[in-house]
View (cartoon, rainbow, N blue to C red):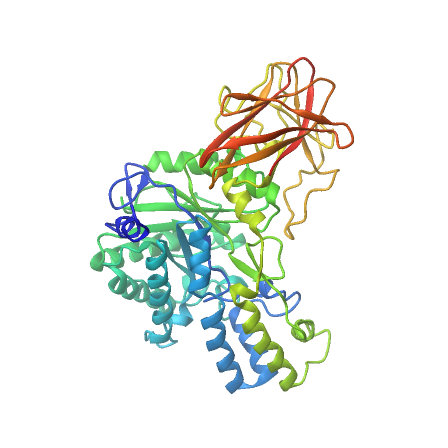
Length: 534
């Protein structure tokens, strides 16, 4: 099948829910794998490297205007919107093997304060959809910043730092009207996979104050959308950063999906069991709509978990400034530190001309061709060679498929449902587990997990390949005797490297597709710290 034919087939019909599963327009079971286009249509301060300075879009806009004046600021934002995400980004996302993007939208981009629709914002959405159509990607429309704000924090552009969407009926009316208009515009558009109604509503104390109003609003939004669009998938997020699903007690629409987000926590089955239970009870598919901002060990393990539990997922975010945690890292231009310092109030602002020169250079630096590309992030998400896998990242399919351990002692707080002996720096009960690497730095020796296997025990990992090639599989392991290495059930000879304390199976042939790599302790016990596939 040609690429154009495959693309046409993909968009033949709507992505929809069917008997608790997500399926495509042809009724084929679907696990969606995507990335979030954060910071584009709703800028967030941390993605610009602002610390102690502006965080919300309004605050960032104010800083830019203060630095260069109204006219230049307006020019900057038009250029920013035309440059931060381009068709080249969409092409790269598709080439990397993703199948959709989640498009975060600030309501102020598409609706003014009087409730009138803004053509410029709709045009940006349309342009994204056309790019995605050409490259075979679906689009999830995500209302990241609703009128008045749904979170009471900086991430939604709320005017006064409160979730005024739930406090002022004007904002409620505007939000319902906005979704109705979007549904009218995109009712026949099969490139659009679904409508993500509200991003991370009611975090922190607000989850206990306005949950009933959120449920009422979800019902009203559903009714408004269904008046004009009977076909598109509707996506509901829980409260408290989309982690609290207590509001989901009934099914509001049979063609819907429930969304959770996951950051900086144990990537294991017990941590998501509640979501799986709710999805089964309501007969709805579930979606991990945001997760990332961590190192590759965490990413590999978390996204292996989602795959093994048939959970569609979306990585956050595709691109940001000077990062180790996103596939695309923007190099800060000369003078950027001065703008960051001015925003934080720790230094005087640069001159208007100097600031403008820096902002102009930033526009050029945001082009994907100028970014530092980090393939290790994508490889970790896809478990794609070449990559390093942590020992604790074995698959989540249970005993007999993911592991066999005769006397395994689970680790409290991580993978406690798997009877495999895990240790952190040789500690059976560490005070803290290492899941909070927001800068993407690797775990230190004191944070590294080890799997302890006794003779006859084994653990299994998944490796995916996109080309037919031979790989070296290196086991970072301590063992008196030779460990066992199997790839797809075939025993692979290993060579010891006494200097590095590793064992390597060389030139292992792997065809295109998924592969099981199984590591076993045989005559003697084995301490496994990880494996590297190159």
